[in-house]
Image 1 (cartoon, rainbow, N blue to C red):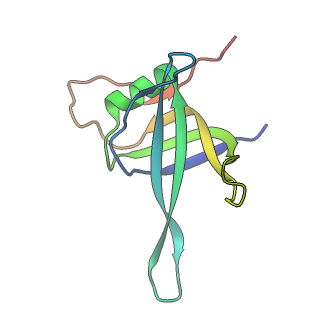
Image 2 (image 1 turned 90 degrees about the vertical axis):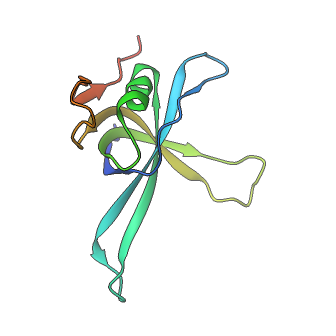
Length: 122
């Protein structure tokens, strides 16, 4: 089993989408994370990682996360290939099954669980 954990800041507000086939919600989270070292010129290097969350987890992320908030996401890889563009390099997406909100809540009246996990499919 492969498990990846990514920590970073959300680069945009989350747009909840619906899978055309299943009718279930999903969202793409784009996280920015600075590397621990700098390049030769002293510039900070930043990596951008895309994460796909589904179902209730996607709905919770859309409700409680905002651009700039810090998240930790655990998941596994999904390779993306482009059959229409054979010369294009394959990419990857993380299929997130656990999201932890690391930034303080924006509104204390909203009660959100600090860590959310996608329910296991039977």
